Image 1: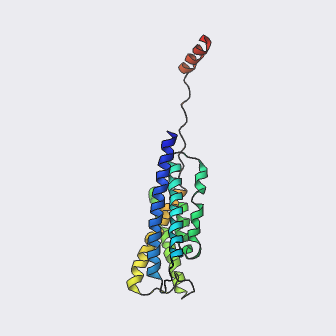
Image 2: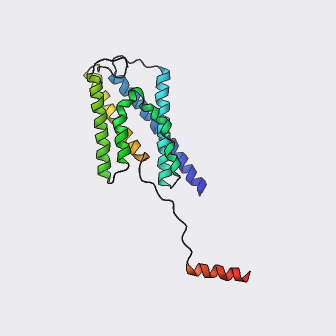
Image 3: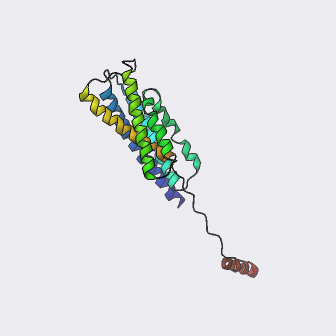
Amino acid sequence: MVGTAHQRMATDAAAGGLLGAGWGVLARIFMRCLATEPAFSWSATLAILGLSAVLGAGLGAVRGARRRGGRRWWLAVPVPGLLLFAGPGALLLPALAAGLVAGRVGGRWVRRAVVVAGAAGALALLGVSGAAGPVSDPYVLDPPGPVALVPGLVLFAVAALLVGLGASTWTGPWVTPPQPPAPTEEAELTRSRDDARR
């Protein structure tokens, strides 16, 4: 039974890793749409995809542990993936923070509203950083025009929502592992009789 639980948690982690890598591809696309001078390199692309996969796998492992009454130390597994939010990824911090809060509040609609508010905050931060004018970072520049801007903003909003939803699984409620049933009086009497016969 324990082996089956570990297999399911490994499956959750693997699925999370694949979803995280897919999110990394989405992030690369919206970066391309929003940057006027996209200076992409294989090393940066692989770093984004790798960190996204690590974060996704960590969140998948936490989700599996949380649903199956695993130990709380699993909460530390996604931490290395937070490097994704350094540098230009900091634009998504409002979505991350909202997701972490959403996992702790009650009610499905309240959680969704918090996640949406976090995505809106990330979009506002993106707008403020774009309004500041061109800077040295290739991902925070004046957008190239409406043809690429609109898809870029839509993809950024989707990515922010996904960050919030993922983060909400990190702080969600933890399942208490089932406790063995307390022995009944009849079972205690039977056990004492068996002990007396020995």
